[in-house]
Length: 185
Image (cartoon, rainbow, N blue to C red):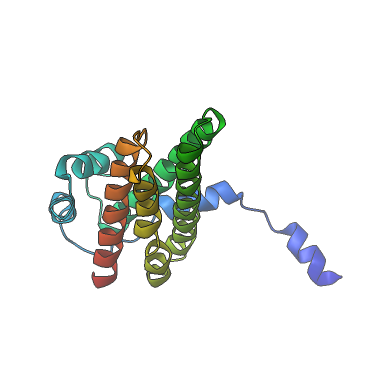
């Protein structure tokens, strides 16, 4: 009984405050210049401009390190996958073409895998378990590619996800390269 009262007398820290502290107080893992890190990552992407712009629009500090850049990739990939999954659900609700509906169903499943994988990667990232981040992200390229493939298989002639898939493919690559750089730092 005495120990239970001790717990009630301690002030409780709201979970959002703890998350804010984790996000803003990640210790640097490298002394490399932010722009050099962005260049190094983005030069490996299929579209340099999209990669570079994504980082620049989401930098929390001009002196961001590889940890902060990796966080950006996970956040952007999660957001993109979630929005694309929602868009696919809307398309499914509004189509009657059986072949197209089947392709969209494959896409819905693929993006669900991507969403869940990046959700898991985010948890591991904040626990600083970067090997588990890699493990979670490793399945995402194939899951995204399954969507592209299903929409390009005849008789399908339309691909309303072309640009979304391209962005997701780049974000996945950015996330994988970033976390590998983080592990090596």
